[in-house]
Amino acid sequence: MITKSTSTALTGAQRVSLFSLTVTVAALTALVDQATKATAIMELAPRGRVPLLGDLFGLQLAFNPGTVMSLGADSTWVLTTVSAIACAALLIGATRARSKGWSTAIGFVLGGASGNLLDRFLAPPGGGNGHVIDFFAYGNLFIGNLADIFIGVGFGLGVLLYVRKHSTRRDRRVRVLPEPVSTAVREPR
Image 1: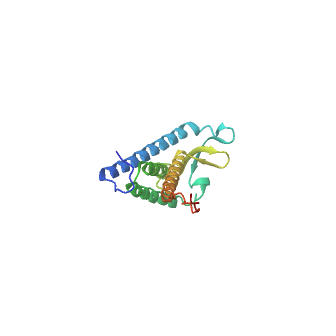
Image 2: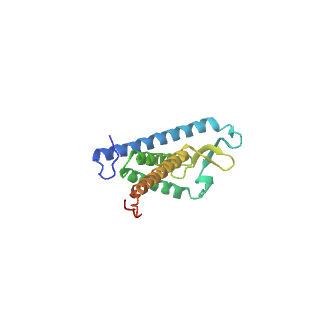
Image 3: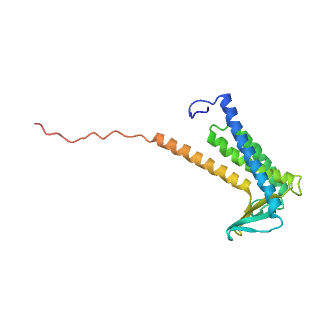
């Protein structure tokens, strides 16, 4: 069991446990992402857009060579390289995670990034130039996928953990001052 400790180093078994948690979360999120993309390809291809909340949110199959809103569409191989480096950096970060919360956050980001990286290699045209499979249509703004949501969840959890840690540190630095001693002169009896 991993206990909360700020002053002691983690044991080897605790580090392995935290790394395993990260890899498990990443593998599950990437698997769910790829399964939803396969379903989207089978179910959405012939239909076009399927409104779920009117024009605000729906399902629409798209193959994105770039990032959000197709930014970098002409540089797919650069995006693939950056994504692969990010995944490697996240794996290194996972070896340094010191809590279940951070391991989970890193796992969500790694799983989402891996899901989109798999598309770069497996989706047409493939070979590192593949297009990411998107199917969540957010109005007329952009179309995303579950991997994007997992990345957002991981970043959000990371921000919460960071803020919580720093607010706890600040609370520990605040000292309660003793009541002031009265300086009033007493009348003799």
